[in-house]
Length: 363
Image (cartoon, rainbow, N blue to C red):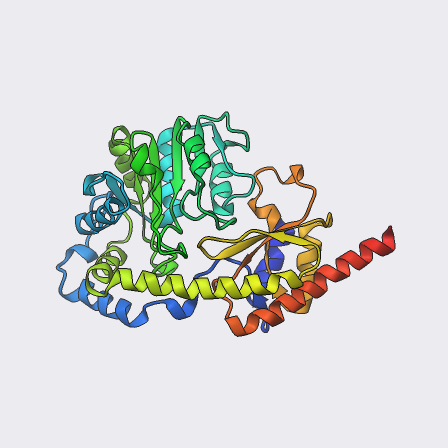
């Protein structure tokens, strides 16, 4: 759960004028296909029959499930529409998978998606960073927050897990034009694969999916029906039309170019920050930054907000935050205009330098 002090600061930053925010992992608002979504909504309510406005089965619209299955097949997975369950975004898919699995422990990377940590905590799972757990939560295509794709050696390790929960949220947003093969393709009998349209279309629609091994299919449908009956039919129909009518793959290529340009600009500027290390993302929305500083996330964030810049504190991404003595943070380039990045990094550099100065005086 997000610490109250950090939560309060980030909420305040979201409503403060003049903030340059590298926080949140938000898609760029200018990439939302507003005109196409308006046409899709019109079609869903006028020409696609009554189904988008009516109750439906918990697994979702057959047409959308078939489209998702085809896209997964193109990446090497052997799935059909019956394997796909439509969810209210990826978070819902993760929660459903854990509900039917009934696991008590789960492995995660040293830094991982905070929303997943929230789900694990809510379900009472013991979260570990040692690879002895039977259930692994991994992001092979594009990792959040690291931004890398899983290496061949790491992939081989992941495939030894008893059960794999594969978070594929950023799988379409790799930068090099080479689609990543999902773990689902190599271990369909033990992989729960989760995807979403939140990063590539709009998070407001809340449409995602979950593919699970066949033995869990009936239990997933029952769990979804108990939880909320179904994902929203209107949003499903809009996504369905968007994929079939508007050149969806061309849209994805434009998104990759858009986010790659922002990533490259941020990487050019990061050496201006004192005393940091950072990786080179292969896709996604963000860069993970580590420092030698030992002050708290909350103290640095407060200084940064005073200077008009925000970031995502590293504590939020740690399953075991007290095991990490050095400060780290995530910088999301996705929603920051290129022309604002220099000023944002200058403000962040000033806050970091002040922290270094205070530590020098104290020493």
